[in-house]
Image (cartoon, rainbow, N blue to C red; front, side, top):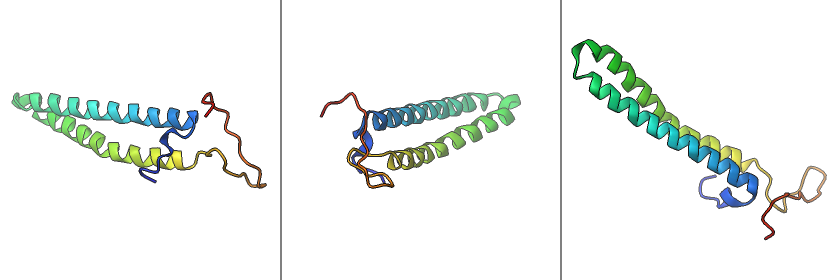
Length: 100
């Protein structure tokens, strides 16, 4: 699955890959922000409990990042490639704006 080189096989592959990269980056940034805010909250004793929840949410987001990579690879693996055959043995034609 990982590193099979199919990320750019067709326009649809590129779109799926780019969607998951944006998702991954968003989760990464959100996790970092939750950790920063949680750290700041720990400077105020009244906000320690809430800060702990921020750390938990940040941790969950950090755990979700590799999970999104698995989902991406699974999604890409199930997209048809140029030259694949369907159930009837016919070659699947991928409509793509790339003439090569």
